[in-house]
Structure formats: structure tokens, C-alpha cells
Length: 203
Image 1 (cartoon, one colour):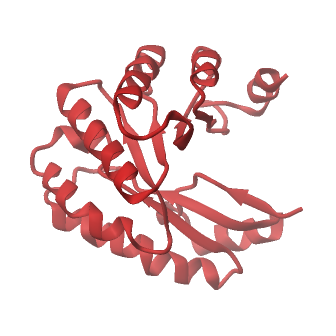
Image 2: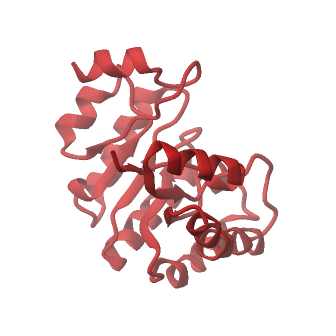
């Protein structure tokens, strides 16, 4: 079986993981740009990260027979930091790169006005560049976050069927499905959807 993983953060994975993934059948991945675990302090930090997603990670993946693609964005968590938001002006030059397949992860973390602004701006960038958008639904108040996300999407120039709404669960799947957006689920134990919950939801 050949497997395509549409959402995996390989920056935090070892080369042994690439080898194991290939053995399991993974042949292509998409790595969404996101928060690295500590605050970035300037747009230059993002640019270094984006350059790695477009250069080093595809090279590293190719050593194990895996095609690496990515999405590029200012993530919701760091959209609240005024030191980071100027990176929005840098995004257009990355969104034209061949390996960039979407704008993302965008969406909500704490559902602040700053996150509203960043989400709307990046949905417009997706529309301008003919790209879909990968949306991160918040870990807290997930249903409220989904509803707020869908409201902003409907007000944007990007059609809803060009949006993948990720990190869904039992509380959000119906409204996401009814919206016409693509549905995404993060499947791993304890903190998100484990296998049993995912199978029950699909049934």
C-alpha cells in the first residue's frame, strides 16, 4: 500500500522516522508550517524556517524515497505576537514556490482579534495565489472556533470547498461537513483522536 500523509511535522522527526515511514508505505508527505515550541522573535526566524521546509526537508525526505511538500503561513499562536506579524508581507514570495501546496496552518488558537486579522489576510493570499487553505481549529472551545472560522471563510474570496478544516472531532465534524469544507482529523492517542474514536466517527 502506498500512503500519503497530508499533515506531519517532519522538522521534529529524526531520519529514522523517515526510514520507518518508507517501510510502512509512506511515499509523500505535506508538512504544514507551524509553531516550533518556543516563541519566534522576528520575521527572519520564520524565513529561516520556511527555507528549511523548502530546501532541507525535501532533501532529507528524498534520501528515503519520500516526496516532501509543505504549506506556508503565519500560524495562529504567533499571530498574537506583533514581532511576528510582519512576516505576512513575506509570504507571497514563498507561496509561488513549487513545493508549496497550500496556505497553512492558519486559523485560531485563542480566538483573538489579531487571529481574526491574520486568518482573513491569509485566506485572501490563498485566493490570490490559487491555493487551498489548511485551517487549524483550536484546542480549546473547538466548536466555537470552528464556527468562527467558517464565518471568516464565508466572508473571504476563497471558496469553502478550497478549505481543509483540520483537527476535527465528534463535536465539530457535522458542522464542518455541512459547510462543504474538506475534513481533517489528527489521529494519535491521548491528546487528539485515537484509532477507536476515529473508526467510530467514520462509521
